[in-house]
Amino acid sequence: EPEVTQTPSHQVTQMGQEVILRCVPISNHLYFYWYRQILGQKVEFLVSFYNNEISEKSEIFDDQFSVERPDGSNFTLKIRSTKLEDSAMYFCASQQMGVRAFFGQGTRLTVV
Amino acid sequence: AQTVTQSQPEMSVQEAETVTLSCTYDTSESDYYLFWYKQPPSRQMILVIRQEAYKQQNATENRFSVNFQKAAKSFSLKISDSQLGDAAMYFCAYRSGNTGNQFYFGTGTSLTVIP
Image 1 (spheres, rainbow over the protein chains, first blue to last red):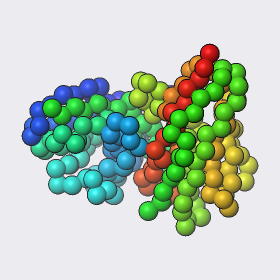
Image 2 (image 1 turned 60 degrees about the horizontal axis):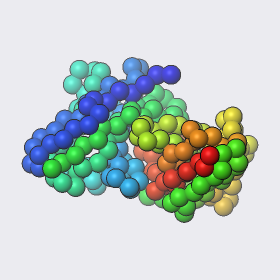
Image 3 (image 1 turned 90 degrees about the vertical axis):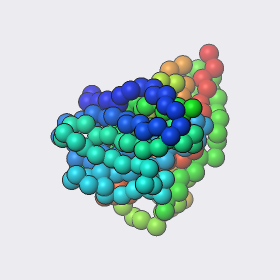
Image 4 (image 1 turned 180 degrees about the vertical axis):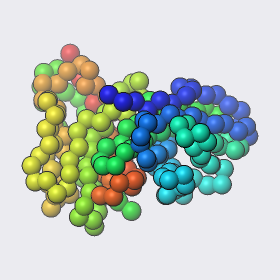
């Protein structure tokens, strides 16, 4: 089965630092997403991306967050100045047309 | 916005027995999809089963089946012949009909399988 790949699996960063989370979606997929899951809480939608632009974003996705697909394969989430409350598991997902979205294995971000 | 509710934070089942996880949702849409995702300790989100709202027949995938009650907006997951590998967090999720729309997740049910 095809896979969405996320790197790194675990990232530790100091508060105030910039962090970039990377995702390699499944090739030929058209829709890309970032979700996050704070420990013990539900998975929350951050942003969706289609046709090289953001198609939808949640209120969590403020000016500290940005996404891009710089080279047509990687899909990145940047947090400009991390806060303690950004500590979470971040999931990337991609989707072709149709129903099913494929999720990556997640990146655990720890802000200290 | 759509909401998904899982009222059972934790459930346990004896190995080889059957367990049912509950999920309700709230929507005014007619075209949507419902999913159960499994999240084992490895944290990867794995699709277990999905249901199209327009289909009356309940979806089944091997030992996993759903009871989809559209009028009641209920979508429960039944796991038959539970195995130790079924132990995980299970999330119910909703997505409206258009491709590219976001998933709405419930808070999850932690399933323990007792040997």
